[in-house]
Image (cartoon, rainbow, N blue to C red; front, top):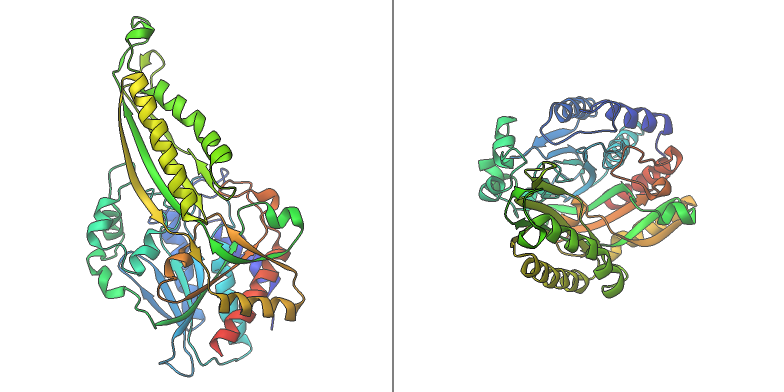
Length: 411
């Protein structure tokens, strides 16, 4: 059995049409009009494949192909369709298209499986709306309930609870959809690597050993807004000067002091009032720290806090550091890794065992099921940008590997 390359290409290109920013990459935030169009398409596909569709309290979609033993636990595969602002057309969608291909090939060949095979589409993986990554999968496992959903808000101060409700979902019923241990036999997610390792080494697939943990913070530094010309330098309480000093040293902390596997990023800055001739009154920025070793995250955050305290005292400003999202490092299931490896050897597909620096929805399920991940190369390692690219032939090999692994698990 193998997947259909022409169909894979056509479907990935189709998803890129569901887009809020044509000509500027792909932007498809959860609950947006573009997202709703993509979801309509998915519903049509699920119906054509005779899958039983369930949509939960925040919009996670689960479409099940029946097994010969309906009491057998589910083999789940899928990913997400939401994107970052001005993103690419492969992130998340590759795993969704791959999951659909698995079911299509099983149906076309009239192949029964003992275990049901389920396509899952997670909502709000990127955190583009609310700066809380994997909010949909966190809701699916019971980590987020109605109160947590009310507390994560977008730039317009609208919560995920409100946005889900206005989109026709029922966030108050979140607990009714929580997945219980034993319900799922395994979860396998196909995804682009989002780094340069596979492309640089010319290896077509990666089998993931571990997924990095993450802590994301917002840092607010508040000073005194004043006239840019009339206020002497020694009488300023300038939050921008403090923020610049702090941000400029983040790379040094990570590169010189932390683990070789640690990464740290300041990716968002907001200045108020953001006017050329006014000393800012407040600066907000984010800090994103990741590592497969939790001690790397802990060390980096501690070093950053010391740096923050020092800069605040020096510039006479106030600070607030708030944890907005976190996920622990994850070791994926050895038995799933072995199955994927066996399938790769059987199909003659070269692969590399590797870690993932990016977090993924499947990592949220490790406490309730066995999880595996398959990577396909990102050309030049680029992702979360409109220039994101993965060769379709590599995607097809990843889909073939996913098909074989899911079939073995579901048989």
